[in-house]
Length: 595
Ligand code: NG1
Image (tube, rainbow, N blue to C red; front, side):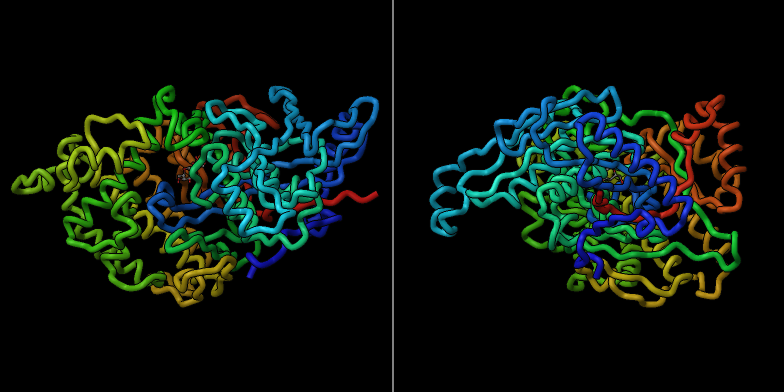
């Protein structure tokens, strides 16, 4: 299983990119970074850690409801060159162990120097540790100041370092080396392509490598570390972004599930039946900055007051879907596991589990069937139904939602308890809460992800499990969808495209996480030859992803460029930065420089 594979360390890029053109292109980037490092720090870097961004093909806003998602690594990545810092006239020996001098090739990110501090753990912990641990184990932990109230580029570097320090430098006679690092990369920031996860993964890898701690570190363990590390920046990330960055392999997407535990499966997109009939993913940046991005980068739990989008966007959706899960379980008389009823509110995935009534892990076919059945019952969440009005009015788009009072009453909780469970950790603002529309999006989107996976499996016949998996993700069971394995690849691509389009429409109409520009961009993409097009990531701005016939990429990009107003007049690199083709790419690795 790939989770058990070691993190790859290469000394030649042709081992990573067998395609000569690709190897040459990336070789030039690695060389440039190494030369720049040498000119800034006076010596060659020892390693370059590399972690890609990701695009989510389908499965939006359902990871926090614990439903499976379908991302893939993109070619764009973050590179971190690093080397132990030795004394020289320009860089005198630092006084403290583990001091980091961090620079970025982008001039707007100013150089930073920071030193981790050893902090004595509390008395109680101290005693407990004394009893449990050998004398030579440190009863202090490492601390780095990470400012969660601002977006600072070095916070992501520190987040990666933090985990390495506290996991690998626990012995009292071992200290991290002083390090120089130089960060570069081409994952567009704040566009839904997970530049932050790529930064944290690359940083974690760089500090492991430069401290000679990479031996024996497996990919699965690195995912867990990177998820924990990213939380240091205040992101309660579900693991989608880090798993995609680390576990991806070329030409495969990942089906990642979170319940009952994190698991991932490699699934290839359908292969072309004839040469030249394959597909690529085209990412296009709407050039609208998502307000949400700022918010989740800081924290989903604190400090929202000064980011107005938080109250009405991402965090509001999280609250609406959690409350909807409780109300639905009550309306359907479901018994939820005790663990999910008190301080940890149940998610819609847990409600579905109780509804299906089988022990977890539940296989994909049973999940699909359960989703189809429960969808026929969610009208109980409509505002009119919750108010007990006779004769349900309006279609789903017109459901007006419920007031705070109506929502509390539907939850069956007292006001204080409701606020403690659902609102004490987040600040949201709405006059109406949309329980029905949000639930309909989440459940139909979860179904679309399963259908998408099935279509891919039908045309590729096998999948590989790469983390400890549930039976639902490790099976290679034949799909039961209407597309048979004898379908042509074009039919499969059309069916995948239709699911992507339906996903976007649901995001736009039911989840209301699109924006006029993303709606326009995806519409233009569909009219310019894409099999399907949708927003990717949180939405409210950022990127779209389109499934495009490989042979038509240039025409497609030219058409989108001429029609999407914000792209008009862009040429060369400026255009390549906002719209680019990518295929599921290779996951994170370390490049070791040899003399
Ligand atoms: P982006 O904004 O693309 O990083 C965010 C969340 C994901 C997921 C998507 C919506 C973070 C770090 N990531 O993605 O977990 O919820 O929105 O599908 O907040």
